[in-house]
Image (cartoon, rainbow, N blue to C red; front, side):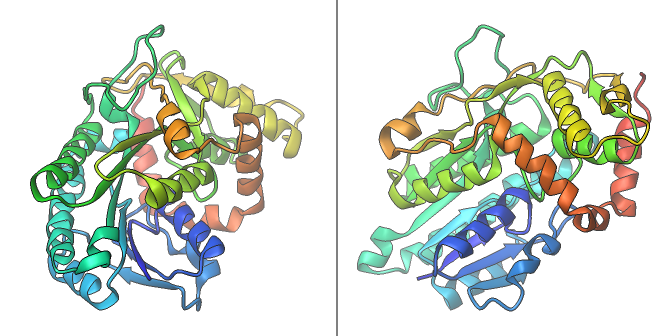
Length: 356
């Protein structure tokens, strides 16, 4: 038995692969394009491990995907591959259309053809699990109930629109062709190996470097925060027992405004790695012009996943954020390796032009 993971060198996919190998003897084929956020350093502990087979390639490469499916005969495909940063989608939406929509379509086509060739129990047991986001649901008012699986799609950025399109494609391949699919929509992830363009790792990296901590607008945008290893355990559970054709929302039950997140990171850094001048890292906080079309609030209602499959997050925000900050302090070499010229160019493009 084998699984095929796409995007398995990225943040969530990489954590999933690491946890899978640690908890299962089943081999994993890892297909990743290695764009800016794909990082083989995150998988260095698996070097030489015969259970992990890495392939550098694109989900839109139909010949490659077909070959991998035929050679390895996976019982499941878990699709993490995506362009996933809202700010990058605002600056350059085409990459998001190509990967999230065209790439998902081409992957589905090859998976459908492969599945149709399976016989008996192998065909019955096969699953295609598509990993998506709560951003497809749009923005919530402050007093609105959290997103359930029945919430209408209202994407507000090129990123979330492209992911919504991919979700719809996955749904259509189940209802039209019978492909046994599962979809998960998660809230904001955080944890080890997170590329430092997203809020939490950006705050940690900038704080330690003595740089400004840029907060969009008034900092009161609310997100539900999910520790990445909890997300990985939820995906394993959905793959194991999820009902074909169903959608499962995955959340951490941790709704917090961005400003509170920044303050908590600074408090932990003050404790774990104090500044030499004795000042708090919060003094580096700077409010900057907000992101265009910035959604005000996301919140996930994960009761269906708990009720039907018995899953709940193991980490509170307090335990998860402490583990995350400590991981970045303990893995400075990994951080230094990702802070390349391309990363510096992106930070300059996205932040230096914003008014304070």
